[in-house]
Image 1 (cartoon, rainbow, N blue to C red):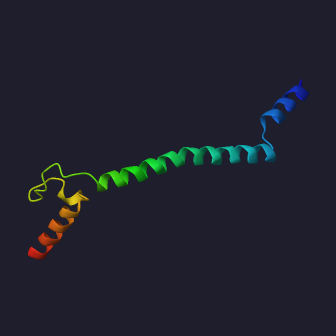
Image 2: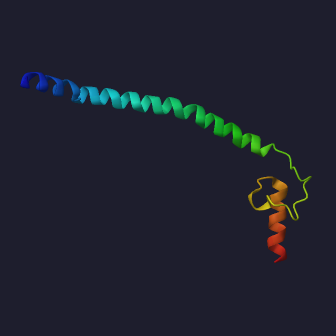
Length: 84
């Protein structure tokens, strides 16, 4: 009876080789999951640069002005700083 318990515990415990194997698999899975995410984010950045202004480039009074990445918004923010 005690021998059965010991054998079960030994089978459940993980050895160094098994641990390294699981660790390697985990790293590979993380990389495989990260690669599409990186490409997706890269695509989003380029799409943001080509977005047109929904407010017809009328920056004054625009709610999105502080976070806007369009070049005209950058110019408007710089002009506002100079006026102050």
